[in-house]
Image (cartoon, rainbow, N blue to C red; front, side, top):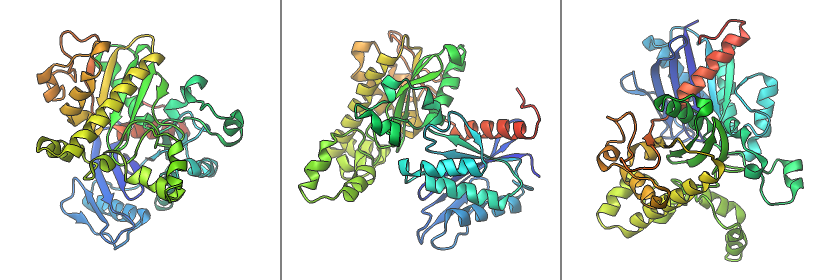
Amino acid sequence: MDNKILVINCGSSTLKLALFDDQSLNCTATGLAERLNHDDAVARIGEIEGDIPLPPGATHRQALEAMTTALKESGLLTGAPVAIGHRVVHGGEDFREAALIDDGVLKAIDACASLAPLHNPVNISGIESTRSLFPDVPNVAVFDTAYHQTLPPKAYLYAVPHSYYRDWGVRRYGFHGISHSYMLTEAARRLDKTPASTSIISAHLGNGCSIAAIRDGLSADTSMGLTPLEGLVMGSRSGDIDPGLFDYLKSKGIAQDELHHVLNHESGLLGLSGQTNDMRTLCELAEHGHEPSRVAIEVFCFRLARYIGSMMASLRHLDALVFTGGIGENSDRVRQQTLDSLQLLGFELDDELNRYGGEFSGGHIEGPGSRFPVLVIPTNEELVIAREAARLAKASNGTQTPG
């Protein structure tokens, strides 16, 4: 058995993996398989030159087998890992923290599949694959929803008949909890505070986007809801819409299944711009006078600013506003344009610090007159998963987790 922790993150057509040393928790290898279940499926491992061969239409299981074989042949993995951690998108109300996977946990994850039909089934596929490939290795599920289980009823209940919640679990769950919890610990460290005394607004901005109000270390509000569709404008998801849109478009001949697909895959930045869901490309197009791209960025930033303002209602004080995710970490334009709408709340950016994403200032990008610190912190969800896998695997073996 190798002294490695394997982290698996299965998306609908992707599989990300990472290897960590089980003592230092240093990352030793990363890999990505894309376009799975399509003829042009491809896989790469950053530390290995060239693509990892995959058959046409490769499944998650086939990609995982090919990538772990490549890791072994290269010497990056010399035996079975000591633990395997999985990102699981939806844990419903059953899971408030990470869980050592057994048949009962797997059944509970499957029961949540109707709440995350694009995510939980492939998460289960990844778990079943690793349990088959490494039958004696403990598997740990780390849930995107778990961190938000501290939301109070006033934040998670919808104003619909209470029986919907009682009988069917209809409520706001929130997502990106792994990233938001990492933002808390990192922000607290940079602010020289304890996590339990830290209150932040955390904006995770990528192809999927969400924002969370974290009050004294606990999630108090967040933008995503029953599913990952609610909230901010995203790469190809609409975010908040008027539910009456379903009835209106039904009268235009658009069926529910079609609209569901459009709201998840053809809306957001992609739908508004008519071009792309990639913020870097949109900014380039906008600079060259493409008006729909400029408007898409404007809508994205205004919706984000509006949500930042609304998160204030859940906090007694604010230690910092934190940006993370591919867009949050890399787009100085988005950060500037968003905070330009929040001058009434006292936010101010330093143009030079913002341009470099706080790279030379400990992540700080606020100006000298800002009422609140503003930080840019790269997210590291894989590290969080590795930590939890190490902790629960050691606990299951009756050994003490290193401090």
